[in-house]
Image 1 (cartoon, rainbow, N blue to C red):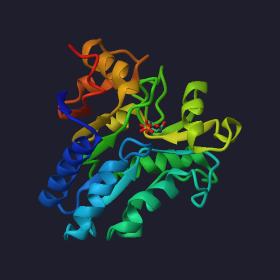
Image 2: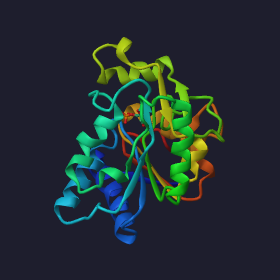
Image 3: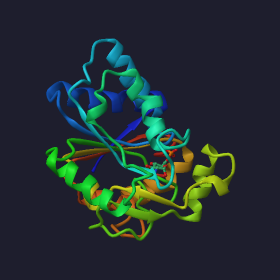
Image 4: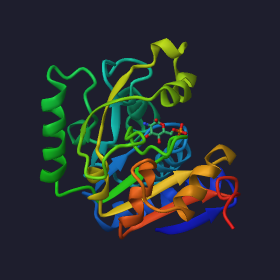
Amino acid sequence: MQLIIKDNYKELSKEAAKIVIEQIKSKPNSVIGFATGDTPLGLYKELIKAHKNGLDFSQIITFNLDEYLGLPDSHGQSYNYYMWDKLFNHINIKKENVNIPDGTAFDPEKFCEEYEAKIKKSGGIDLQILGIGRNGHIGFNESGSKFNSRTRIVNLTKQTRKDNAKFFEDINNVPVQAITMGISTILKSKKIILLANGKEKAENIRKLMNESKTEKFPASALKDHPNTIILVDKDAASLLD
Ligand code: GLP
């Protein structure tokens, strides 16, 4: 893992955008794994800017990390809605090249199998963007997720539902399950960037950089990955030596 520390969130977002833009320029039909949450919002703004300045997204293929089980695409808090609202509606991406887990799949387990197969068929993810949950989760791989896990249905922990309640009116409205790419699905990506900003992520970044690998702390699986960048701001790096 390579660690890059930027002065602030704006600089972090610009650096992340630089990596994504280089990826797309060097391979216009790149397969990109996208993430949701607050952390990548700055990156998405930078990508929209890059598109306005001429960057072509028409050939990229995307796979999102996760989606709440039970939420239709049209739900304001679905990750599907988020991706179109925050990025895809503002760039020239082809709808048929966008893949986001379907929270209302008739047979979710079969859907997970097919999602995994589709990633493989696309040639695999060239660049995966990740955030990190307060409890160290990546995607919705909660503590205890097997490092060899694949795309599947997971139960969300109380902590995660509490954290994500900020986006819903009430914690009781936060779904209890989700579809997520597995840890092994994520690790198959050729390149990974994990983004973290703010003091509330500092303890996670300290653990990730200083402690050993354990399934209790899902992000630590990245330690085995040959091409991962941990891109943080000064606040998120504040507990590092
Ligand atoms: C959710 C998503 C994760 C994301 C995490 C952190 O749980 N499933 O993919 O990384 O939130 O969110 P934030 O960036 O808002 O801190």
